[in-house]
Image 1: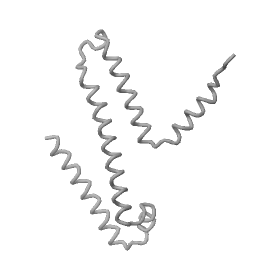
Image 2 (image 1 turned 135 degrees about the vertical axis):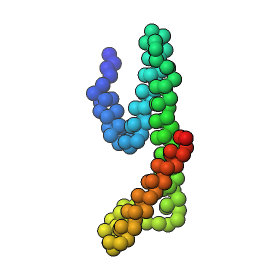
Image 3 (image 1 turned 30 degrees about the horizontal axis):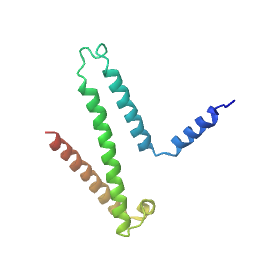
Image 4 (image 1 turned 180 degrees about the horizontal axis):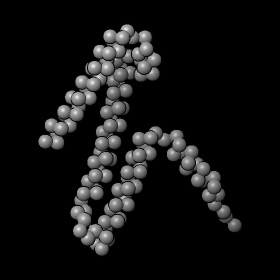
Length: 126
């Protein structure tokens, strides 16, 4: 008689999920939501009065955003290491060694970049 050790299988699944990055867990969750929404929208009685493409487009846009974010982060890290710059953790630790005016200039530059990115997003939408 063969038995399946469900407890062992479940613990392996939980261990695998704990080792995965938060972004990857979110991506898998969005893919499961995509499958759930498509199966939900297949029934014509459930979608009366609902534009069927709107929920799918929202999930698709979130999945695309996560893919582009992960790709850009991967490219950034590759270029960062190829240029021979120190690791991010080392640079963050040395932020406290900067003088006050250097910290202020860095924060202003970061704020300006955030505003430029926001402006770029608004321009892309319009």
